[in-house]
Image (cartoon, rainbow, N blue to C red):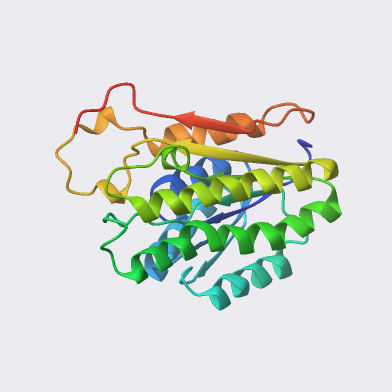
Length: 237
């Protein structure tokens, strides 16, 4: 990537956890950002923090469970950023439960947030990257994309689907010089673990994932990191 050009990155679910950490490291390194999250006050506060790094930050509060709001965010970003260099499909949710006994809505909301949003974002921003013959899409999947997590059947199904989406995108976009990378974190210290008594240092940290993303973006133009797995060295529930 050219050091003389300001890079533009889009991040979903950017106000907390992994999304927040990625937004912070990219802003510190000169990326203009387009970010979304559900809580408008938290998003506005974070937008102001990011702008202190001297970059342009567009922020839009949306409910990613609603397709029309996701598409509205895309249209708003496209109007402000003619090219997108990086897309981070980060938004998602984890709802524990037994697959056979849970309400249908438990699966449906995870399907929307863990798969559908990435589909809408990748399809639309991917077309922009295809036309520009440049770009990089990161999909924040999970170790549950490769192994079924106990008491998390719907989560495992949807994260597996997200990894499949990632692989389809990589195959279709490689010929247009667009890179696609899956991030598969293990137990990461985010809001999902709020209230836990497990020592914080035993988790994967959001900053670990953010540093990995930035390192991958710094690699040469001819290499694609297909996927990266980050798991705790030692983790006892």
